[in-house]
Length: 454
Image (cartoon, rainbow, N blue to C red; front, side, top):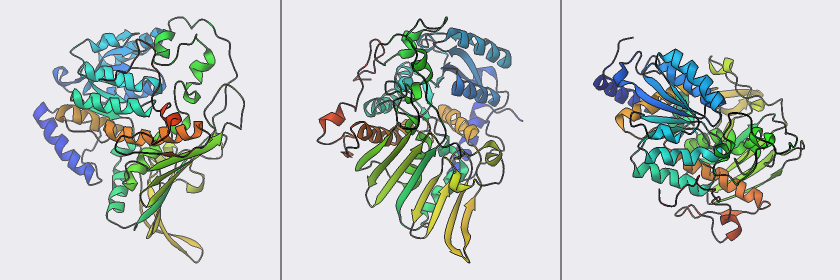
């Protein structure tokens, strides 16, 4: 592929943005530059290199227009191992660090890729913005309603690009679905159903102990309340209130954000949620069965979660990479949108969408459909484009924050025993409910504090 200089890159980026807005991708490949000159490569620092962080680093390296200067993880052994792999692959040194704040001091670093546990998303973003770095941060945006707004404030104050890892906003097939809805072809929409159904067991309790060699447990625990190392806490953080908001935050944040975008809604007027952890015993606190209801003007949005349903299947790679649709009734991450002119099923991260009319002769009638592909490369492309152009990204942190609010409102209601919470869209706060507002913001453990003034 022909190498592009900075001016050519910006020109192509503009054309690609127009194409993506129309629901198509102009670039033959989602990498904008292959083998870019060293002085034009975007210099990155990884914050968190396990699981998702590892996948992200591989994807950014494959582009050819980025280079890693630092690989940071509170587990220094993990950082050292991945740094060695990255260094070999990119042909230059990526330094391992246990404390990512040292990477923020390096003025040559353009952006950070934050793939930490949820309770670190806000603080890693705010500190990075304050240091003049652009940020790609994994979903969900934040651990609480309050700190999500602080992330937006930091992005705007320091004029930083902050892209949330909700890749659906960069998928051409979802852009086509959005256009189909905006063109009125689905009619008026008054109901949307969001599903998140999978199998995720519990963990038995474990005694407190010393942390594994090489792990800075105090920093991993970060903003959360002080606690001695515990293997069950370390492994089960997705389902513990001190670190996350359960699977409505961990996985369903993708569907919730996609549904909110497609339906064109902003703040719910109210939310309530009920459920429980009934299917298995162990240390996990967040529900394995949960229903949430969000009221919007002339629209109701429901969310349903189950974590004991192995017969519900996420869209697999074969469907994502081919012209295929999921079997919708057992698709674990589907969205159902009910309009006056049709019923739309949408898959996240590929899977496409189909619109159904009334059955004919007891057989389904598909009015319109669009195949989908996994949009991870396009989302990285959009982030790199915006680093160079300084335009807001597809999944700008303001959009991600508003979607995360739905998650937090639902969890606040759940933790209050299903109490309905009424939202003030002007302040994002919960009206006339001091108990709910106590859950609006967490208490921080120094020095890991999101400041009131970012």
